[in-house]
Amino acid sequence: MPLFTPSTFYYLSAATMALTIPKHIATGFSVIYPALAQIPSTSRENEIAKGVAGPTWDYAVVATVVLAALNAKWARLGGPRTLEEKLILWSSVLGSAVLGWQYWKVGMAVALPVLWGAPALSVVATLWSGC
Image (tube, rainbow, N blue to C red; front, top):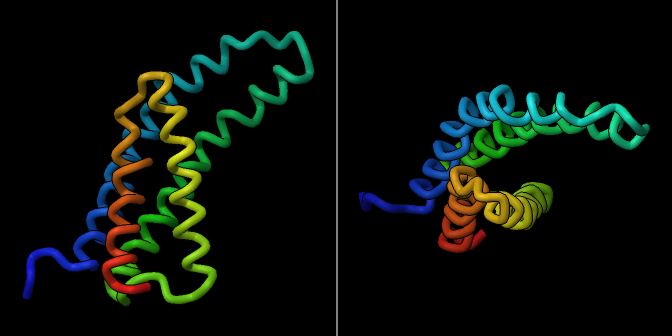
C-alpha cells in the first residue's frame, strides 16, 4: 500500500487542526483576553466588541474540532460525499484563506499551518480522490 493516499492527507489535516487547539486556548489566555480587558468601556460599540470577541475566539476551537473530526471521517470514507460536506469543506477553505491573511498581516504566522496548511491538505485529498 502506498505511503501517501488521499486518506493520509485527510489524517494530516485532522492532526494539524487537533494539535493546534491547546495553543489556540493558551493564546486566548495570554494574548486575547488581556488585550480585550484593556479596551475602555467608553461606548456601546466597545462593550459589544469586548463582549463577543472572547467568545468568538473560543468558538474557533469548536469549529476546529468539527473540521478535524470531519477530516478524520473523510480519511476513513474517501472524502466529502454529500453536497453539505462539500459546502463545509469549500467554505472552510475560503474562510481559512481570508482569516490566514489577517493573521499573516499581524505577524502571527504560527496560525498558518492550521489556516492554510490543513485546508490545503484537505483540498489535495479531495481533488485526488475525485470528490
